[in-house]
Amino acid sequence: MLAIINLVILVIMLKDPFGRSIDYVRLSVTDQCDLRCSYCLPKGFKDFQEPDEWLSFDEVERVIRVFSELGTRRIRLTGGEPLVRKGFEQLAARLAALPGINDLSLSTNATRLEKLAQPLKQAGISRINVSLDTLQAERYKSITSGKLDKTLAGLMAAKQAGFFPIKINMVVMKGVNEDEVEDMVRFCIEHDFTLRFIETMPMGDTGREAANHYVDLHEIQQQLAAKYEFIDSVMHGAGPARYVRIAGTELRIGFITPMSQHFCETCNRVRLSADGTLYMCLGQDHSYALRPLLRDGISDEELKQHIIKAIGLKPEKHEFRENPQQVVRFMSMTGG
Ligand code: SAM
Image 1 (cartoon, protein in one colour):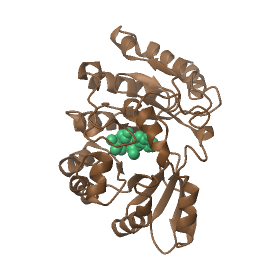
Image 2 (cartoon, protein in one colour; image 1 turned 45 degrees about the vertical axis):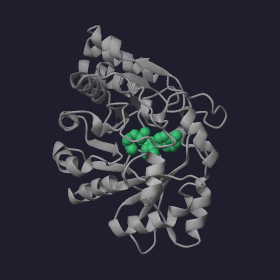
Image 3 (cartoon, helix red, strand yellow; image 1 turned 60 degrees about the vertical axis):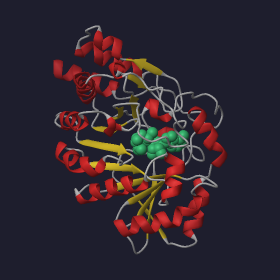
């Protein structure tokens, strides 16, 4: 009887108010980052949360276990830069060992992957996405304040460790790196990486500033289609990219178009920030603070009920276009 009740509750629990199944959590383990990408964090920014504001590894594991009991199968570890959190590989191993979780992936800037790729593979991370907006060292420095060499070394270490697929995320910006789209295509063909182009989003003042460099990715698609033959394709993953494959190669290219063609009707995710706030939408403020509840000693059953209540707050869509001033959080605060 209990099993039947649980099953009925499960079916209800998995749906948001718009009938979308929520089975994917993007988990930010820190808001800190070792880079200052121009569209994400201001140069010199240091106003991060204090580490004691973050959920502990025990708390993270508990929340994710309860999510998995509510049907979540996929977790993406993100930040900030997740690899700056001390002991990250131990947390990854604990999450990978949870019975319900069958896809544990990572978004990283790769600056620390040279050392960590192998341990992370052993910990049970299955897939990696790497942010890489340019292949030019000077430009990389100007966009991120970091060193391209370190990121490329991390990327190659991930390949060496056997991660596949490795997806490169390139935020395309007019007057900044738009001229490198074809270089990036060749680079990804050469190394057998998947390439995803992303439109800038107006998150925080930095994101709004980047809107001055906004490129509608349909333009990029047309530019590439004039040179390469596209074949429609699909990729394993829970994300919003629409993929094509370039004929005669294994290269898949994804277009992530939150601005020019949003994909909210297929949204299947919520985001848990490092301080234990559940955000229902990247582009809206609907949120639910889990940390005080966890520290008040609520039971797992109560935690489940709170998560269900939180998912009931999920809005229909973001309003990046209609209301670009709305989101004051930088992407790194929510967990990108
Ligand atoms: N540090 C990790 C990384 O580099 O992938 C994870 C966090 S980062 C915030 C996640 C992704 O968000 C990156 O691919 C980054 O390029 C993207 N991002 C950050 N701010 C953005 C914005 N305003 N518009 C579009 N993409 C943004």
